[in-house]
Image: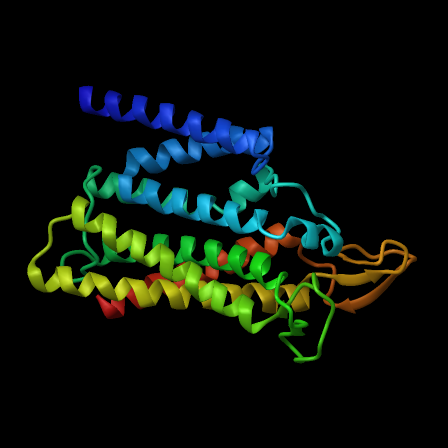
Length: 287
């Protein structure tokens, strides 16, 4: 009990300090803080490796979001300084992983484990899903934020026709490479922290490195799925008044692509769910 209380206290202290800094830098708004702090605490109580994945995702995605803000302001109709994620965005990018880490902690009693289906298929599936989740989240953010700064015009993923920057479903080579790199970073973080928090046999320990290319692939796959959903189920149009691509229909908006079925948060959630499941299954076969 004393160990749990110490871990809880440390988790709360760290979470509040990170939230305060993020709020000051306008990476999140106050509603996101109310959701983000419990999410961070749960991740830290479930296992330090999960907290590191969450922090790597949040810190790196926040940094790439702040890059080229002047250029993004001229393109993005929903631009906000620093990104300023709200509670819906935080929840859509963390709820699935939060559920998985809670289940993992209940099964393992808070002890970190290796990716090893011979030891436990359930634990391996959960770990694979968590890695896939954050690889997808990071990949989508890096892809969209860095892709927007690319000098090349994006192409719609369904037709490969050139479209305006900011169009849902528009992809660039730079954006796709960024997505893979973002997943790679998640994989490296998972593997490195695992060297400290887990105890595996030599053979199993070596195989843990396969999580790095798997995470890179998950980052790319998640970004592609997000783009495909965005191009088909999310509306994009060009506003002749604002001279920007917008996500809502209107009398001054000329349609570019997609139907008004899902919004951006829903697209993200579906892409994350699919990537989480596929990465989980992949890890069962690989490990």
